Length: 179
Image (cartoon, rainbow, N blue to C red; front, side, top):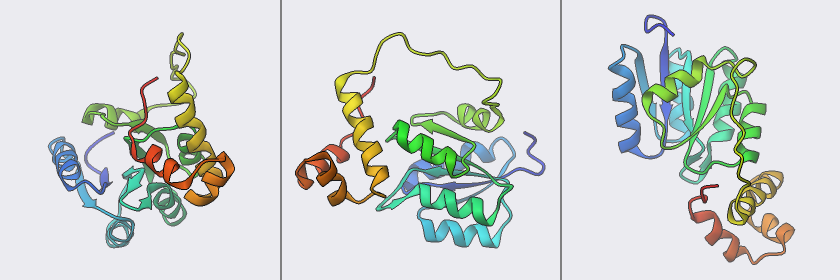
């Protein structure tokens, strides 16, 4: 990836993270613009030409997946990376289906982020972990899958899981457990 024709749109609802990431990318001689929500991101994308976008999965109350879908529909050549602190298999699969070139979990440093745009999933090999996922992690993955199937509707997801809506909301507010 050469800085000459590469421009980035960084979209995250955390202004400090957005600023730090944008600064780190611009220090590598890339042009960078930022946005903190779906509306601002689409407006910025209309006003500039971006070759790459880094989109957070959770943009406040909005889903970054809807932004990925919009960006890929409007700008098919744009490479979009989803970056999230709330990773799950179902959202990763959905992001790739919507056209994201990669999906990374936070924390990720600038080098990992830039390298993920150059990754070739057909030739890159990922080591499969030898230890199974914990029960808590499996629960998180299942909740995310059912939530995705219900288009993000908390009430419908709670009904599908035979769980009280408030209990589901508390589980979703927690960070996902590691393995």
